[in-house]
View 1 (cartoon, rainbow, N blue to C red):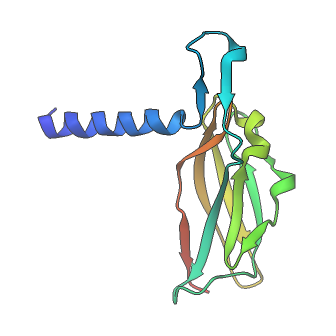
View 2 (view 1 turned 90 degrees about the vertical axis):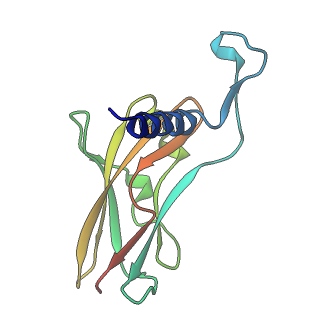
Length: 143
């Protein structure tokens, strides 16, 4: 492995470590579970769907499906949550306990009478919040 590859690997590791523990702290340095303090922030992740002319695509029905851990289920409370022009809710902290301490792959599935597509995302959650590790923020489709 070259020095550049080692540096790149180290940078990726540091970024991943920061992403996995951004919003929790142990106030007094104690080791008890009761010492954990989370922020009051409610974390949400959305995806923006645009056509090839960068116009929002609003006419989609969506589903969010978990596709690993020997499970396959939909997050029913999050189905069809459009949060703005062409913006759809992927996941939020309401599902944190379902994802806690395990990598979870989901599929964002979108469909209309004219088109259907899906994208895969990876999330994890700690004691406080969910974090997106992989997947696009914006999807461009021919519509």
